[in-house]
Image (cartoon, rainbow, N blue to C red; front, side, top):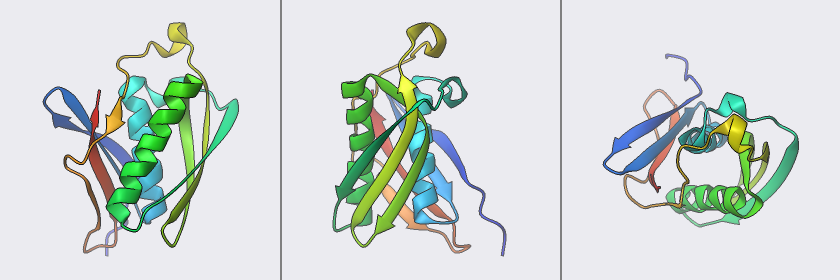
Length: 142
């Protein structure tokens, strides 16, 4: 069996941007999707980890939980005017708890490209492949 690399990527989608996170576990896939979300705004390596924010959400289905997770991160970005570089997700049953590590937006250093408005149900998918790798994805309205 091949190893499952932990990574994120963007998906092409007209005027919006898709995010995908992959990893050996569902938690890693959600974390990497968070990094992909940050990368819509600016390169994640420009973000310092000087503050933490906690997020909790729940849903009966994995896809809906992923949708709620991304929207919770977008809410924190917007209301706190922050960007996050690293995400630590814990999943138990139908509940997600996460710690987001980041800092307030610094327009000169971060040079924000776009502002994510919300996760959508477009291309929403959370699945494990035959090799055991988990991927979580959807399109973000920008």
